[in-house]
Length: 195
Figure 1 (cartoon, rainbow, N blue to C red):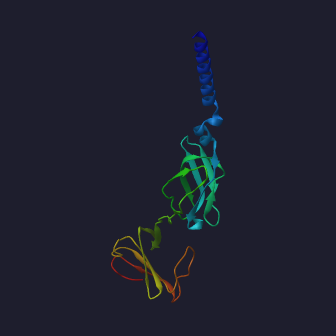
Figure 2 (spheres, rainbow, N blue to C red):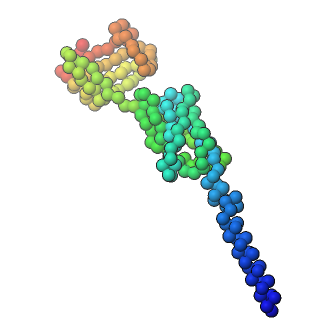
């Protein structure tokens, strides 16, 4: 009986020693393995020129930065798997989009395309040397011509209003002469006098 008790005690001690050793060994711990794995997080912004960099912030507030290519793609160097918040640095003329939540998995993660919109800017013009800021802007196309209206009034008048006619043109960022038949501007005063 004493012999059986010693064998049972020895087997229990050996089993306990093996259990403690395996729990302390990170190579056998799936959670420790997943925390030490690295993967690549990538994505796309549109339009391609709308952002310059993307920052990924993990739960411990550690940050990683990726540069946006001329095609709008970005990819972070291998980072630890886990949850990240992505923030975008917009290019000039664009507004920063809402932050995006991303879960980086062991095999890598591709984030859905992020659309970045142009920043809203106020238009100003001078009337008799006095600067006027026009918070309302309207655009319409009629018979292939683009008409832009900038005004201080949501209805377009009364109030200082500038109308720009750009025949056959969809304007992009740039400088345009407004002194020809095809491209011209008109000013509408608060009393509806047009210049």
